[in-house]
Structure formats: C-alpha cells, structure tokens
Image (tube, rainbow, N blue to C red; front, side, top):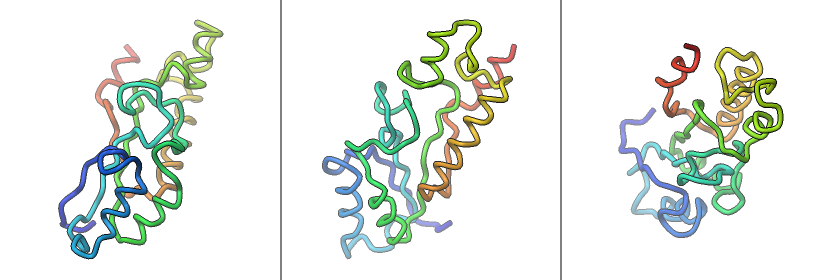
Length: 149
C-alpha cells in the first residue's frame, strides 16, 4: 500500500456518481496525491442509511459501474470497501427469508453460528475482492460475537 492520503467519499460526493469521482481523480494535478480511496457503501444496492443497509453487494446502477472501478485501478489507487456483516437490509434475501420463515429461517438475521451465513460472508468478501478492494472494512464487527450469546 502506498503511504499517501486516503480519500473517503460516498460515490455521489463529487458529482452524481463514482464515474464523476474517478474523472476528478484523473486530473493531472491529482496524480499520485491519493494512495487509496474508501468508497462508502452506497455504491452497493441499498435501501436506507446512506448505504449501510445493504440489499446485496452488487453495484448500484445509480452510483457505480464496473468500468468506474477499473478506471480507478488504472489510476493506481488502492480501493477500500465496506462489508456490513452484522445486519442486512429488510429487502435483502436473508431478511426476506427471516420474514417468510420466522424461526425456521436459514439465516436468522445473519447469525454467525449458521454455516449458510458464513457462506454468505465468504461470497460477499470474494465479490468485494473482485471489485478490486485491497482493503475491506468490517463494519460493526465487534457486535457479531454478541449475537451468539
């Protein structure tokens, strides 16, 4: 990792979407200024809380495209993304399963005792890595073990 400042921003902080930020970062006067970019989670499909209520880890068409992430990588800027592992959106497949099946849900609101939840974690982390994330912030990680009590 480079020892340059990290830019922290929502994908719509500079312009309307991630493409606008990448265009901004592509300016010659910003070359080698930022070593990394922490994109706050509204880059994913979310429904509330400025991105911290994740429906799924697919890119939101409104805020980001795969080519934006490729252009960011081409600038040599390390990518940091969030993984919200302690809860999910009410619109997520996991939460919808909980509503439909109650105590018989396969997920029980992302209970870390569930093998299926660990499979979900693994898939989400692989997806973040596929986006080019070299840094993944585990949002509210300290709360996860409390669910097991």
